[in-house]
Amino acid sequence: MPTTTVSRYIAAQGHEIALDPEGHLVDLNDWSPAIAEVLAQEEGLTLTEAHWEVIEVLRSFYARYEMAPAMRPLVKAVALALGADKARSIHLMRLFPGSPARIGARLAGLPKPANCL
Image (cartoon, rainbow, N blue to C red):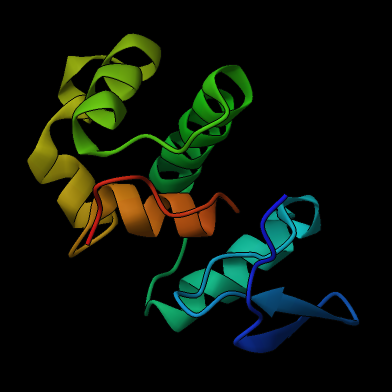
């Protein structure tokens, strides 16, 4: 198993949580909703119900396929789980500005999706 480099730590729930150089959790088992809130603050986001819906889709996708989805698979997964209106790229960009797949995966406690900058 490859070793992941720890770049820094965040404090959450009385623990220090290790992050890789791109800000993703080193140990996916460290994830919790409280960790997601701390990571969201770093992104300048306040998580709403709409964010949590997408985070749950991301976590379900990862549990099934053992990988974080890039943008196209994310849009398809959101469409199946939440409906076409919530799967539109513009909606996802409003929730996770810049890179919905990467930022969403980070907040969901998942590794960076393949093919994401």
